[in-house]
Image 1 (cartoon, helix red, strand yellow):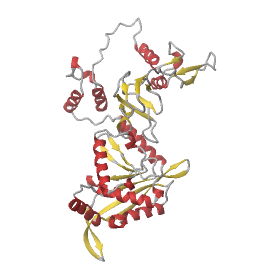
Image 2 (cartoon, rainbow, N blue to C red; image 1 turned 60 degrees about the vertical axis):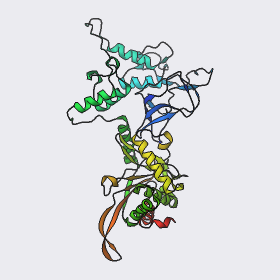
Image 3 (cartoon, helix red, strand yellow; image 1 turned 180 degrees about the vertical axis):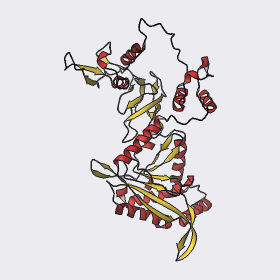
Image 4 (cartoon, rainbow, N blue to C red; image 1 turned 90 degrees about the vertical axis):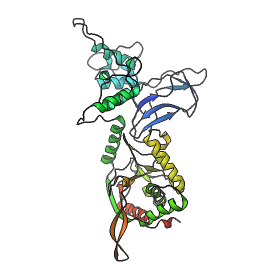
Length: 420
């Protein structure tokens, strides 16, 4: 299970795109993994045959745990080497004895409160199948109890089961339109629209993970905020001129990416993170763009943003946003961000304070451009104005460092020609 972020601990396996025994090519997508950021396709790290698959769709797996192998021609699966060792239960017997337990078996046992010493195993190690067999045996009625009819498992596609779980629906009560009455995703959606409104929502795994990350950031990074109102008339004129004279379709976010990337080059302390009491300055300016999707918040990364011209920035931003909404971002497009820009102006928001995207040192929040009466050369005038809010991690920055960066960004917005 790959790490899709510096603070990620687990990944949810959504699906295998290749079956065990199939040939895969290096760089070819082999599985989909869901994290707090997005559902992404994971590419094969080598060419060969997919073998030894030990994880199933729906499993939430610790980062770094082996879930499959890619074997070369004629190669066989290696013997298991990484094993978890749990002390034998005290209260009798040899206290030094130990059980060999697979990580998945240990996790399932912990979730069900099972004492692993009671689980029977055919080999020298407790496996996932052993724990599941123990759970099933515990659920069987005793011999003295009347035998109950065996429960029939409702056939359903993996996507249908996932949608049903997210919506809080039981696939067993749904009418399936697939082969042999299997419940399909369309059946789940149809059933959901027919239900009356309820007062609670079943949140997805991605939303739960996002909530954990922002909670971690909020509780571990001491936030402080700097606000600045900026005259955006030159920014508006710049966008109009580019679209009319050059024919390039750009957004205000595209322009801000260009300006913020330049400002980070002048103020490297903002392009940093804290690790073990040290402020680590980043070598690259990789700008994350917060994108709201149906399942939470995604932050695709525009790598080396300071080396891109406006046309390249606009093209990259359109592509990243489209694939973020489609859930088709690649692994490298979610990693390596050094600073984040969050723009809610298109939603009519005037000003907001954003939570820092860990482990970064700061995030810039941008509100909408709106007309206000402001002084111009000592006289009142109606001008387009926007408000910037810089959230800073006080472990990495103080007020003066943040203020100098924000002042430079404001000066670029009020006079973009400074870039030249």
